[in-house]
Image (cartoon, rainbow, N blue to C red; front, side):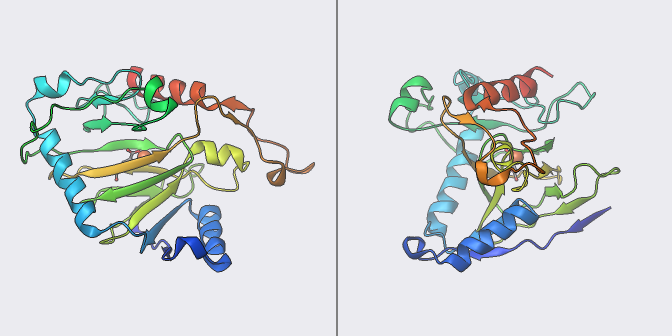
Amino acid sequence: METSLVLPIIDISSPDKISSSTAKLIRKACLEHGFFYVKNHGISEELMEEVLRESKSFFNLPLDEKMSLLRRDLLGYTPLHAEKLDPSLTSSTGDSKESFYFGSLEGALAQRYPNQWPPEGEVISWDVETYGASAHSDYGMVTLLLTDGVPGLQVCRDKSRQPRVWEDVPGIRGAFIVNIGDMMERWTNGLFRSTLHRVMPVGKERYSVVFFLDPNPDCHVECLESCCSETSPPRFPPILAGDYIKERFRLTYES
Ligand SMILES: O=C(O)CCC(=O)C(=O)O
Ligand SMILES: [Fe+2]
C-alpha cells in the first residue's frame, strides 16, 4: 500500500545562529525517518529553477554527445539503464534513469576525480523521458535533493518489514528534501537512519538534482564512541570511505 508521508519541515534560516532547538529538530528527524525537508536555506528559487533548466538542456543533447562524457572514475554521464540501484533485482534492465555526476570543482579531490563537462554553449532544450530509480539507500553521509515537483519519490521507513510499505514524499516548492546516507548510519551505529527510497515512473519526464555529501575517500568510517556501549556494540565494521563507495558503485553498475 502506498500513502503520503508527512515529513518534518525544518526552517534553517540564520544558519550562523542555528539554535539548539533547530539542531534538536534535525536530530529527531534523523532518528525517526532519516528524511526531512529544509526550507529558508538561502538558495534562491531562481537558482534552483535555473539548475533544473540546465539539467533539461543537458539531457536533451544528442546521445553521442552525452556518451562522449561517459562516466570515468565515478564522474560523468551514465546512460539509461546503466544503473541498477537495487542490485538484488533480477530483471535484466537497469533503472530508467539517466544521470550526470560531478564532484568537487577545486582542491585535491577535483584533481583526483576530474569532472567532465559538455563544451560551453552546447546545451539546448527539452525532451520526453521517464526516470525511475529502484529501491536503494544512499551511500554517503547526507543527500540534498531538488526535484522539479513531478512526484515519484517514495520511502520505505521499515526496510526489515515485508511486504514493504512505500509512502510518497511530495516535493515542497523552495524546500530541499534531505536524507541520511549509509555511511552516516554506520557512524551512528544505526541511530540516524539511512532510509530505503525509490523513484516510480509517473508517465512523464522528471528531473531531480542531487547533492551527495560524502566523506573524503581516505576517511575511516567507524562507529562514534557516543553511539555505542557495552549493551549496544558497533553493528558495522570500520570501512574506508573510498573503498565503500567504489564497491557500492560496482554493485550498481555491474548487477
Ligand atoms: O530523483 C529523486 O527523487 C531521488 C534520486 C535518488 O534517490 C538518487 O539519485 O539517489
Ligand atoms: Fe537515492
